[in-house]
Image 1 (tube, one colour):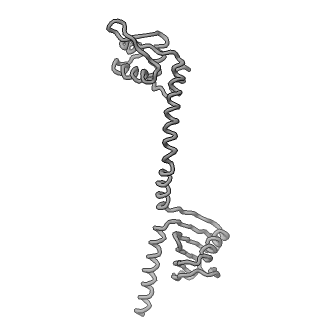
Image 2 (cartoon, rainbow, N blue to C red):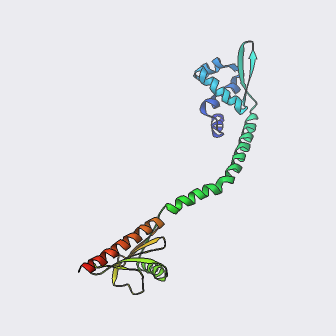
Image 3 (cartoon, one colour):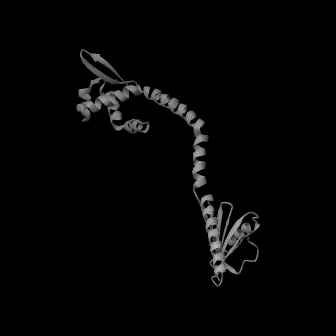
Length: 215
């Protein structure tokens, strides 16, 4: 239980073992600690240095030999108090830059397409109604029940004759399938993708005009 509690408050395995060992047997030289715990001396020196920085181990000299001892267990509370103060300081520091971090997220989300899927006749009609109510620039790709592709720049009520409608407006692409029994709609929110489809519409429309002129 004692070992687990030390691990819970952030002590690495080696530090927890050394601290508990020194509590049990009192002040010891590094060589003794290393031998009892099965660690090499350089590792023990490094771990004890970390424990000293935590304020839970102290040292004293007896002749030429340096001995290390665990401080009173109450020092663990002091260690946690210091950690809390440090975390509180950095918490306040982070709070000051959170608005800037959020700006980075907004920039990323602006570029990231948002795709929504809707199923059923009612949902498809709602998507079409939204497009019909839009009064700005719009590009339409439509396919009738005979498979004929039609390009338009406005959407009006009475579209039952079209099995497939793709409308491009603002930064949105709305794709609707009106086939009876399998109605669905996909809406893609992305300025970049919408702009590309507007270009495709213009190229396709010019191609249709050129073919008509050739005839």
